Length: 278
Image: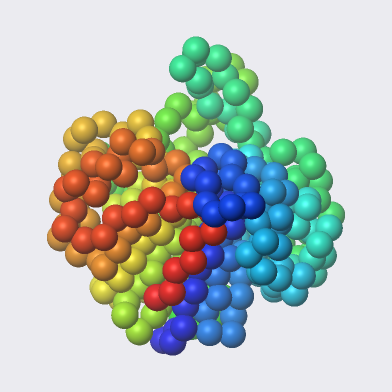
């Protein structure tokens, strides 16, 4: 079991303290006893400036986990690799695919990994670990790989495609999350949770053989969730009864307020500079 677990938000949509920069993106620095890793790299290299301001040293960080191949999670990769060339990268092979989403004006927008980031990743191919199934970094730290999806009310959270004409739906099968076995139970970390929060938590409990969930933090992609999905998600979380939930990035302000008003435990907004100890 992990005795000391600390997570620092290096990038989120919500601004933090004075001098910290925010953007539409996500990046966490996680310390689990003596093991340190970075989870996602935001939309640009701004997370590195926040890391410096927060006195987080990424020069010798050994592991980077990429939750999926969208620009707001992979955009700072080239900047990171300029700083730390020896870092080992864990991701699904589909992280390099071209991706598109349909916008409110009905136009398709490219949202895949930026060219600069994909080129940087290809340059360190020997340091890339492709994850498609559950993978342990340590006996108490795991990466889900592809998340099995069974909850009928959950979906990817938007209109996503693999082609510019919007004819080939993108199920975002490269979406992955992480779990940390602390003495208080599981701490679950998500990027955008395109697989659905209920699907993700259920899958992690199944593969980790741990039924206690202490906390959940990350993007939950409930921005456009229907009332039915929010209600079903809240019913599940109320039964699960973790200690806390920290809603970041793509969760949506309205959805976070819904969760906070419905659930009997702590629900807070993530923000740049937030530091949590579990």
